[in-house]
Image 1 (tube, rainbow, N blue to C red):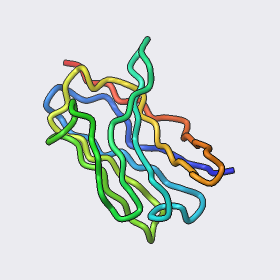
Image 2 (cartoon, rainbow, N blue to C red):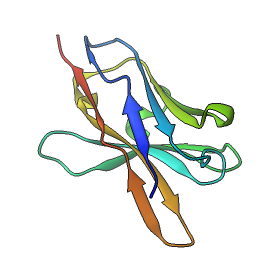
Image 3 (cartoon, rainbow, N blue to C red):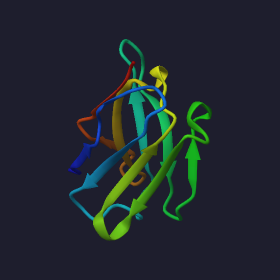
Length: 117
């Protein structure tokens, strides 16, 4: 079992910024691919960004240039820095880790981000 705890979600105005954090209970950051996903109301959960074991990053086209995924291996934490937020970024944001040996995904409980004026 892997525990992931997200934090940092809030309500902001368009153009604002937020930083989400995902704290892992075990030393998995840097050892596995980790990512952020989001699920807008009434929609499916979609990939936002991933960070590989080497630190390589990947982003959905909709967030490129606005969001940055990073990690602190010593703190077992992955971050998502979000800027230039718009109403379409409103969603519950989930942290994810994939274990290739067992082919299992683990998710956090999610953190709500609301962008409105």
